[in-house]
Image (cartoon, rainbow, N blue to C red; front, side):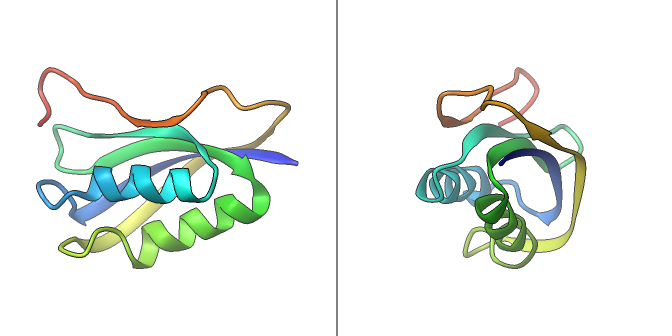
Length: 99
């Protein structure tokens, strides 16, 4: 069964390649979704995949991240089952007010 979650990671997660490592981990696990920096200094995103791979990603976001990051907390929201993935890849979104 496929699952979708939204996440927001707090701590020192911008300017430390957190998005790049998140995309790489998502691709490694076969997940689809995205991540991006926010103007509040967090990284937010959506991940979609099997329940097992979503559980692995949640653990990675909570405890690992990029080598230079310092994760304070992660909030997971909008956790739900889906019939098919809504994205074709795992990518980094860029916004005007973010780097």
